[in-house]
Image 1: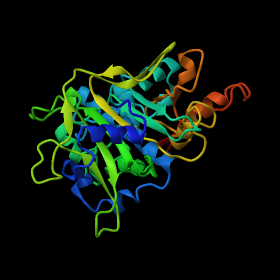
Image 2: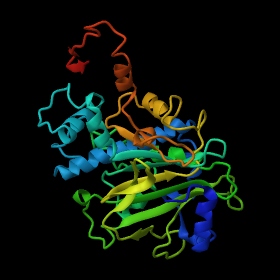
Image 3: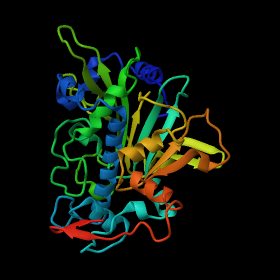
Length: 369
């Protein structure tokens, strides 16, 4: 996790004997012709990053549902995202008002408390050196090591199709970012790390590895002889039988430091532990525009707010690159709450007293704020 460049990742995999052994690299989605699908997912790296964040929001909602003892695809589950937020994060009991479940109206204290469970951290290169690495972490449902091939490492499966209160339903959004991970690096392109452990409330498997942390690295391989397109594969060296058919690596740990820790002079991208959840690290992630401090006006914080105008749950952003200084923890972290919340906050001192006028109307049974 602490490697921040493609060359560091490749070097570590070479030292372990994995990088040059094609038999331990399993084709993404078990499809050796996966590039046409993955390569056409996204043309915008910011939109691809936002899809990663949406997946983490969904994971938190799914995990909270399981912790409440409710099957996510059952009739007892919330019917909308806002109902899920109101029930699982605001403590409301059904039937729930359509006016509830707006995290944009939470206090800063509550937003930060929940945002610490869904984070984005920038590490690695400064703007004049190269592209930063971005880590997205959440304390959501997570996955068991043996389920990686059917979840993180698949395309088009119906994993969340029948869950009404999530945004990503078609198992496609997670792959869009791969094209922008160290895209032109000769040492290795498309590099992405995944570390995950299943939430105990969601575990159903009897596999001896069900309670372990699984991890893998995704890479983009050059076209094979006779092929015109490259292929995405992932490290899967466990119990390889005929080649390219193994499982991902795993380890035992009660908790693992997937979250940033920023306190006064302490600034660690991986300093706070979690008992379950997922970390996805995008190495040398290339995106247009400024790559300076992600919390500044033109940085990623503002662009995420614009891309997610009404975020179901707040996201806590951390600037962990060593080249940036600041007086205290506030200089290195901030909440993304969506453009709607930001506009509401910014207009507070610019309108006459009593404006704007708020209300709730219904059009054909649909509530409109």
